[in-house]
Amino acid sequence: MRESKSALLRYISHLLQNDDALKRFVVDPITDAEGKYGLTKAERAVLRRTVHHLPQTSLNGFSMLRHRASYRRSLRLLQNVLHNAGSKSAADLHVAVDGKPVTTTADDASGGTFFLYVYYPNVNGNTDFTCQDNDYVNNNYGGPYAQSLGFQIVFGSGSTTVERLLLGASQAFPDLIGYSTVTIDSENYVSAVTVDNEYTITADLSNSCYDLSSNPNANSVFWFYSINGKPGQGGSTGQAGQSFADYELNSYDTVYWQLIAPDASYGFQPCAPQENNLYAQR
Image (cartoon, rainbow, N blue to C red; front, top):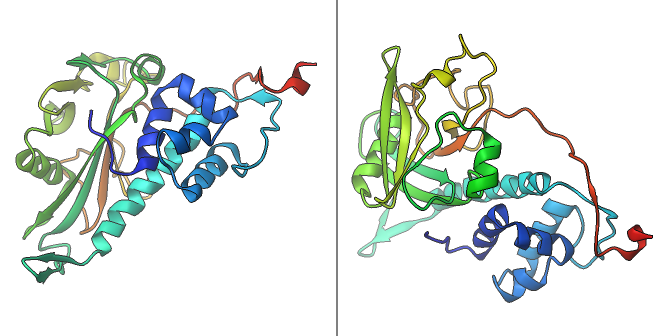
């Protein structure tokens, strides 16, 4: 799998999928971060404060351990912020080709610059997640955010939809990304994504398990897109069930694809005693 050029993003990806590494980080947030992954002091401090709400120099005063899924939600928030801010920072850069500056001034109707991130689990071959839930992905494949691919695509003219952006990435980088669709009620939806021209990850929305009319409590993963890291309502992901073919983008938008199911279950699961806190063991 490819690794980010960012030491912090590499370490976050590792913590999102490796239970032992996450346990070590909870108790000792410096040794691995500094010795193995080369994080800066500032990066280590931000990571610790995000996940544990403590400065990196403080002793671990927690007498109980939160469930790992809770820590990973904090990690995911930071990952989202980094990717979203990173894509916008890239759009702010002044780029030169052969010594001549290149800028993008196209308005929304005449092309523009767009960014695409595709998150996917740890898979070793073609894998079908149709009708599986979030826990299945988390417990068996390192979670939906274990790996990621990022792309910057520039269109010279024409309006751009989520579909056009994904198609453009697959045409420009066919060895990195590809996808398949299914048609439901005359609308196209992504049913599978292929990464590295090797692993096809399927979640087929045409399966009856996704039919809410006959299965109102369906909670199976599917290829879900969001815009600029804003899930939910308010136009950030389109209307409920809106096809990726219809959602129009603005220049410099960042589109995220992720294999997840709607999950409104939050809060704390039962906590376990912190084994390295002697006071809590008394």
